[in-house]
Image 1: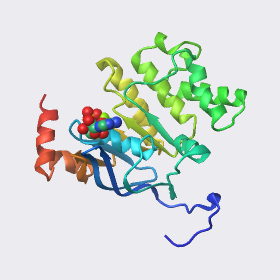
Image 2 (image 1 turned 120 degrees about the vertical axis):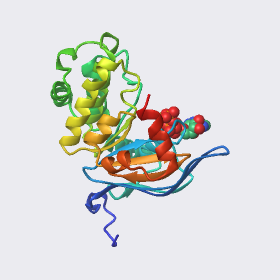
Image 3 (image 1 turned 45 degrees about the vertical axis):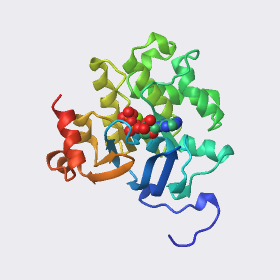
Image 4 (image 1 turned 45 degrees about the horizontal axis):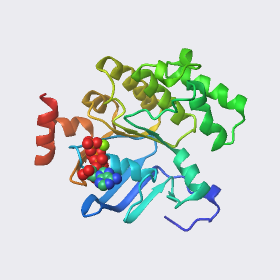
Length: 258
Ligand SMILES: Nc1ncnc2c1ncn2[C@@H]1O[C@H](COP(=O)(O)OP(=O)(O)OP(=O)(O)O)[C@@H](O)[C@H]1O
Ligand SMILES: [Mg+2]
């Protein structure tokens, strides 16, 4: 990149929204991310798959700096991940994260769950935050649940609230780490449909999932990880019909035939 002004407002707009370069991460002796190079374009939907323990969650967690890296760089929209403080809080707000376990505040209503961070991090006023929250809850199909507590909702409804909560921060990119794997089968589709719609609306998304139907229909690219490395990546059609590596072939034969 050419030299640019240091003023953060002037960060150069590029098609590359999330860029990881030579990222390495250890947990003790375990080399959990090995020389990860990954570039996600604005508006791109990338599905990350791979065996248990291959580093998929750790990858997600480094991208919003829930985990530090040992070496390499990660930039979001042209800016390196900040180390700490308010800049980090803002970065985290730019990167929406949805986990397997919905992580809603149990003692707050659905509406409060979706307004809290808007007020604290984005400094929205309460009324604006609530209007936005209601619109987002409608968008994910749980508008009628606004005044309930999370425990009064189904898993699928809670996960959709978690998505609305992340969207309330106007994130530049959304990370999903196995968002449907804790759900009963009949609730999986309602969450996937919300994610499909988000993808169609142009959201940049990184999705760890074993939902191959979603990968086939929504992903622009599949990234396959094994043992802390990106082993191969391809458009879904190519990856599923003609995986190149033995690791991917082996993995696919296991998940597609059970
Ligand atoms: N905080 C931690 N401390 C030590 N080891 C960890 C920690 N978090 C993850 N690991 C290890 O790092 C490796 C990668 O874990 P990670 O959770 O990223 O894998 P994953 O691909 O998401 O697996 P899964 O499909 O089971 O969710 C695993 O061997 C895991 O045990
Ligand atoms: Mg994981």
